[in-house]
Length: 141
Image (cartoon, rainbow, N blue to C red; front, side, top):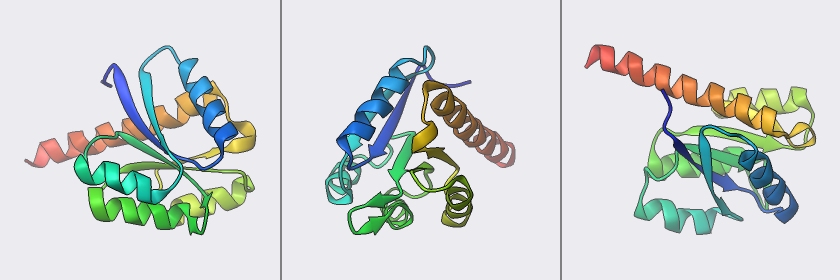
């Protein structure tokens, strides 16, 4: 169903949060996640402009300097097109759920509850949704 290795683009400006994120992903036995981290959109832009289909999942911090996760996701989609994206934030669960649904994210992660389990569960749901959409498209073409 899923590839043995999933490429994840993490857009996160906080070093400690990025370290925790990587450590939790390393605890997941399968699939393996290959994380590439960017601290801001300009550095990500240079990378995705070269190879737009490089990442399977984008994990976007809610507040990244002067930009919001929603704004960054829109910028990514201008370059890449449709992407699977997860919002990561330290705000309340109710607020993050609202922003996720309004902003076109496929899932969310709460920083205060981040763990290998929550990452695995969220990524599985996002990948399954992506696979289901691909299967539906294959039926029509």
